[in-house]
Image (tube, rainbow, N blue to C red; front, side):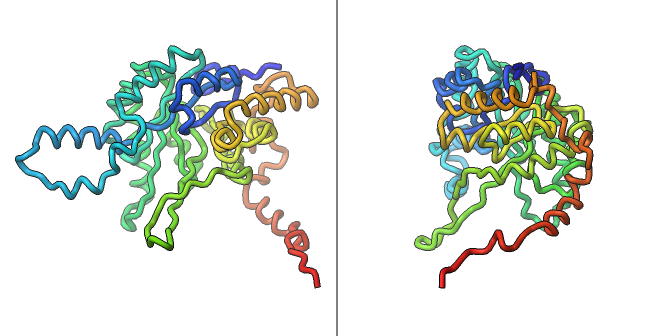
Amino acid sequence: MNLTTTYLGLELKSPLVPSASPLSEDIDNIKLMEDAGAGAVVMHSLFEEQLNLEKSALHHHLSYGTESFAEALTYFPNIANFRVGPEEYLDHIRKAKEKVDIPIIASLNGSSVGGWTEYGKLMQEAGASALELNIYYVPTDPDLSSHDIEQNYLDILTSVKAAVTIPVAVKLSPYFTNTANIAKRLDHAGADGLVLFNRFYQPDINLENLEVEPHVLLSTPQAMRLPLRWIAILYGHIQGSLAATSGIHNAHDVIKMLMVGANVTMLCSILLREGINHIQCLEKDLREWMKIHEYESVKQMQGSMSQLKCPNPSAFERAQYMKALQTYNPDLGRVYTPS
């Protein structure tokens, strides 16, 4: 069976792609991913704050003793908290390219135009096969319009595309007024692919210390429903590739995403839970399902259950919502309490 797929114009041996995570901080892990069957690897993210901190540190040393507001520095994340700095990140790409033959996709994580352009170019020179722009932006200004928010995404993409020649993907938030519209605009602005969707890690409150603290929750299989719906809707309406991420835990999840139109399925939480070798299990189960159902290739199934080709296109819209409510059996949700 032929598992090859095309993503961002790159020919991949498999649609199974580890997404940005701490696992890729170790070069040996990247090699293990290739050996386990990964079609490509998305590197852990280089954060905009890291780029800003590097510039802030340089400015501090150049202006030390002339005009200083030391207390302002406490509002930045401590640079020691980042495992890898900008220069180390570029060196990491070079070492990964020497170690493996599969494409290495660099990841830039930020929310403004800033230094993305410069480092996108440096990542390309370091050997990255493509870039993923992880635009993690939580607007809190009530006077900021949806148009301005969307324009920020377009400005970031346009500036990076002008500086590099390698493919560029945009990792989208699910919180747009019209996801189909922003997807189309990014596609027209030159995005080579869209990654659906970014997971916003919500803060928690420590009741003992009365502090707001980060709280990372790994995804569950239920999280795949959102990207599944939107990939099904977008398939055939944009020119760029579509990557599915969030909630992909087993081969059936992979198959569903491919059928609605995904070019690749990205893996993170399941690899953190089960280990990198779980990629082999997914590939084995994928091949077995394809054999039983007489599919000769991944490309044969891609998009076969998208809204464009589905016998009932409304299944991905409001009609499915109403049907779900009408067919729900309350008895299934009841908890039995013994007398």
